[in-house]
Image 1 (cartoon, one colour):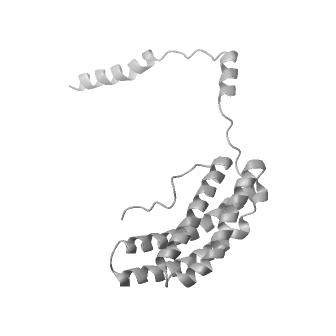
Image 2 (spheres, one colour; image 1 turned 90 degrees about the vertical axis):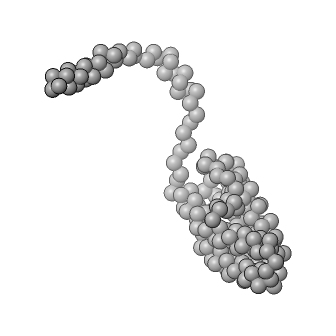
Image 3 (cartoon, helix red, strand yellow; image 1 turned 30 degrees about the vertical axis):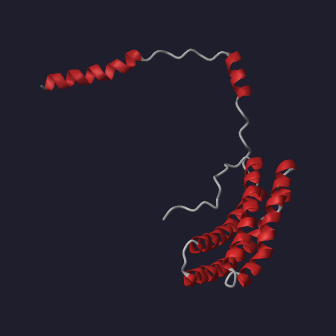
Length: 187
């Protein structure tokens, strides 16, 4: 039995060595065509661009909070519970306030001038949408408890334009594009 195991070991150890064939060296013509056909890898972001992306990440946290408040109001509208709808409206008001804090914290880092050409235009549009959300947040805080449905609709409208601007910016900057960020996970 021991001899059979040793024989099997040597048979399997030697077989892959015999099966390997030397790889022919690449021809110079093949190397030049491959290099031209490959797309250029995007350059790593500069420190200023990294700062912009960090500010965008901070602002996105505030936007996620506001979207959560809108989804709570939307879910509460589906029920006939008036107390639940009022509670969702107050919750939206609170989330608009905390979302504004994140937006304002990330906004100073968002300087579109760190990008060039088309990306700069997309970044400027994105920053404009963030400024719009910052300006609307106090109105959201004041009116969400009184009229949650109308306030949630207004915030959702601004979120859609923000999502479009974010998608355009990410495409222009060569960053991975995700699905719509307003989609919430199932609980």
